[in-house]
Image (cartoon, rainbow, N blue to C red; front, side, top):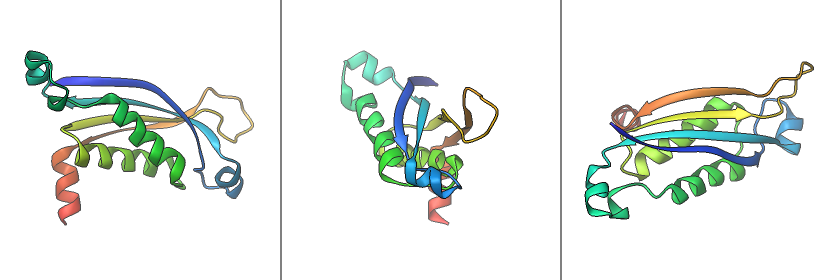
Length: 127
């Protein structure tokens, strides 16, 4: 399966369990691997046969900055669902990183990685 990779989508979002995190916000970073068949796009040099990565970045920014979640698991799930339901993607791997988590010990980031496929999303939404 072919993949489109987008790394380092950064934004300031209002997600977290603590009210201060949801009020002040935090810096986040999202990495994506989007699987689909790219052969037709490659043969025909046709953007309509692939995924416009600029639109994907806009989707991530819209969800990450305009919505608020308690868990970054929920943020990742929302991004996955939107990509799988609104594009030609058949599988998406998403890493969401909170770049300055509110804990005493300094760490580079805390995050989650999820993998979702179109079939599982469709079945879940139809249930």
